[in-house]
Image (cartoon, rainbow, N blue to C red; front, side, top):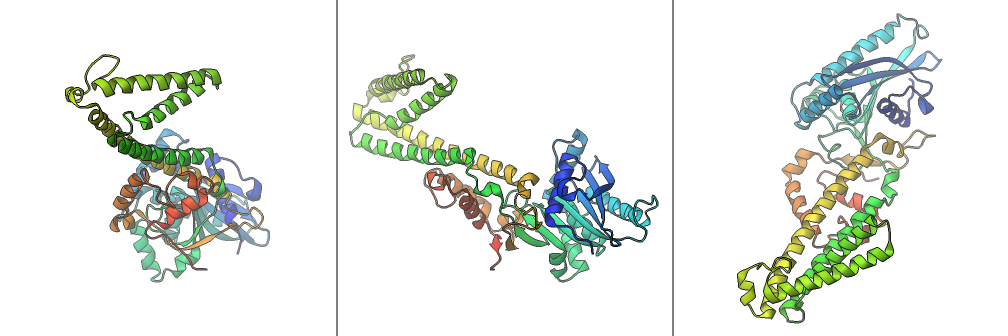
Length: 437
């Protein structure tokens, strides 16, 4: 039987995105046939390699979602992705296109009417795909049957109900699919947790997991800064009620910091202008707060914030105003943290889900995963909904803006521990279960 390493499968997927001919570790392969159906978003390519001993490898590669392609192709893929997210219990047009391509090309390859290969060669057939292509690689093997020797997918969204049931009908035990379908996954993300998987699950350790990216540093620092703003607001509020202060210096610190940072960049790192801006911001804040403290109004137009405030004793007036500022700071900090968390998740997904990042999880020489993490179970959307995780998670993230719930929260305590942060979030998901080795 012809052999193809998992690194070679991953590299073939990268070639499909880049629209390149076989090179590097798969330079001994050639493109035998290609097919594209814009309506469904399908694109498939058959890569062949004759091994010289009467055997050969035939790898069917399926393209994943690719926004750089023509508009009709992208539209077809988006429609397919939407249908896929609904866990359909019926066949899909893109699968019909894929199966027709594979069956037709297999027949053409076996007959070899063009005389491209040595006569009587025994082909070993494989399917592979990344993301949407991984789904196609798996369900095509279910439709074709045992003639497909092996399936290798990378961050696949999983398999819909229709084909899960079909796979069970073909083999009552899931052992066959575990042995013939290899699913490589990154940390759980909205794509690879769409649906259940039927293959042997392995989580990859990628180079990006150990890198402290600038974006990660910013989010960690911002997470701690937002909490400090909340703590400072609460302390300021307590001192105000105790009559120890009549100003709200927590807001002043935030306001001065924002204006100073903005000036630092707009002045192209001019230190003198930045210091001058900080002094102006501090002075203006003092003047504004003094006006509000004395009159309950705005120093710019002389209007009253609330007529009642001007009639209150100075200490009580300061306490009321400080309370409103404190409440606003807490709300803004919490919302800002949620936005930071969401943008971080999106950024992590885009970075790890790319086939270029996935390639870093494999050793080029052996062709195997560098640090494979065998999995016994993997999260999927419906499971998380059924167990009420989605609502609990939303509340938890909102509260993370107020208190650092280790180990999943952004903060300076996670500045140099990005991998541990990602792992902690994965372990909190229902269905995430690493195999006991």
